[in-house]
Structures are given as C-alpha cells and as structure tokens.
Image (cartoon, rainbow, N blue to C red; front, side):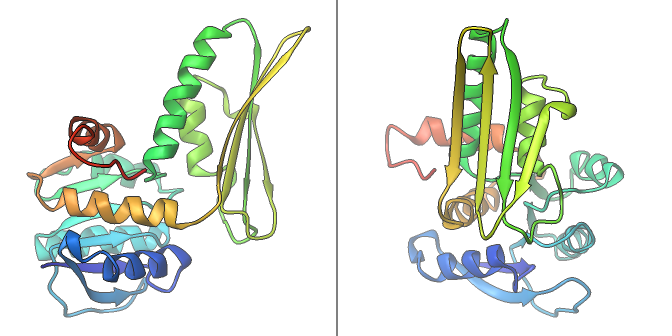
Length: 229
C-alpha cells in the first residue's frame, strides 16, 4: 500500500480525496496523515498531496523532499518564484496543475481548436466559483486563457454560492455568437482525478510532471481500460 499525506485535509478537496482513497482499494493507497499548514507530522509517506494554500504548498513540497516522497500540488495562486522552483525539481516526482481534472484539460484542448476555427471572432472567458475561493480569476481560468493566448483583461468572474466551477468561452461576431461551456457539478470530478494521478505519480522517476504528461499516459491506456475524467 502506498502511504499518502493529505495537506489541507480539512478543506473540501482534502476531505474528498481522503474519502476517495478509502473507497478505492484497487489503487492500493492509504491515508497516513491528515495535515494542515503549519502542523508537524511524524508520518512516513510515499506521496504528499496538497490542496491548501500557497504557504501550505511550500510546506508540502519541503516535507515531500524530506521524506523522499512524490508530491502532487493542486493549489492555485502560487508565487512565481515557487513555480520556477518546482519546475526545476529533479530529486522527487513532482506534479503540478492548477486544475487536475482530465475533463477540464480536454476542455482546454477543445477551446484551442475553437479559437483557431473562429480566428476572426471576439473572444472572452467567464468563470464562476464558490464564494470561498480566494483567487480571482481562478487558476483554471488563467490556464485556459493562456492556452488560447487570451489576455487576462478578457477574463471575467463571479463568486456565487457553492458553485464548484464553471468556465465559458464566448466567441462573437457581428452576426452570431458561439458559447462553449464546462460546468463541474461535483467536487469529486477533481478529487477522483487527483487520486488517480497520485497513484500514477508514485511510479514515476524523479522530475517535474504536468497534465500533459498524465494525459499522454492515460490516452495510451484508454484502449485497455476505462478513462477516469
């Protein structure tokens, strides 16, 4: 069994990840410790999963290096200096993505194609998240905008209720308007994907990994088994 430290364990994502690990025995993983930013832990682990805060992500990274464990970071709004630091990691397997859902990754690929097909259209991106979300625009919105070379000024956002996450690309001309939308209806979309990525990451050699790396793996495997989006 691969042992997991969940950083940000009291958050909604941390709780969902712990529940999915316990209910997915076929992945051969178990929760070794539930940790919050600033807390000490004496647990050993094969991987540290972080969905907490920029401070917590730094602590998770340092803890993973200390334990010589893999590290999965899904926390957004990370400082640029820290992003450069993790991208250069070569001592442990380290995965980072502002959105760990394969479904959202494929949505981004869809937006790239649409943006190219409607190249003469005015483009804008709108996102909606729950009122507890601290960064605005979201890390996912920034990543989607980056994928289609959309300026940050073209991203609008709302914070409403307990909305899990909605992203809409609008393509407008003087004669018509196309809207492409992704709406997450359940946080398990992200938690389940994070757990599956973690199960893959612990088997990888040291280095920096992204959704592109995991997507290549999952597409190669898709003919043999069901893909978890």
